[in-house]
Length: 85
Image 1 (cartoon, one colour):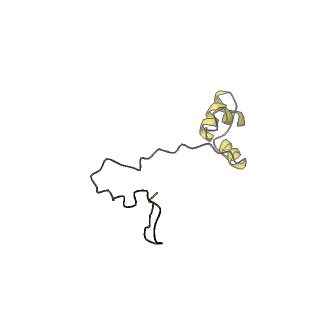
Image 2 (cartoon, rainbow, N blue to C red):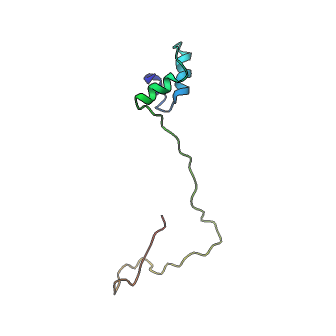
Image 3 (tube, rainbow, N blue to C red):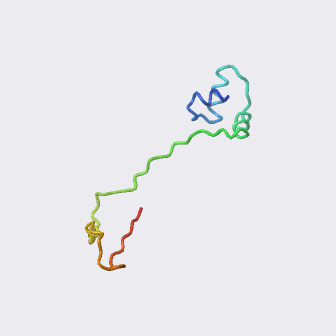
C-alpha cells in the first residue's frame, strides 16, 4: 500500500490505492485501506483551486497617492499609511 502511495507522488487516497492493489491482485476490503492510512497518518496532498482576487479593470475611483514615496516627515503622526492585504 505504501509503495502505491509513494509512486503516486503522495496524491492517491484510499479509493485509488485500493483500485491499484486490486489490479495487482491484492485482496483488500473497502474500508481497510482507509483505516490503515488513518492509523499511520498517511494523507494525500490536496490541490487548492486558484482564485483570482484582484480585478484591475474597473471603473471605481482610485485613492490618490498623497505620500508619493516621500517617507521623511517633519512631525510625528502627520502621515498614516495602511495596507489591505
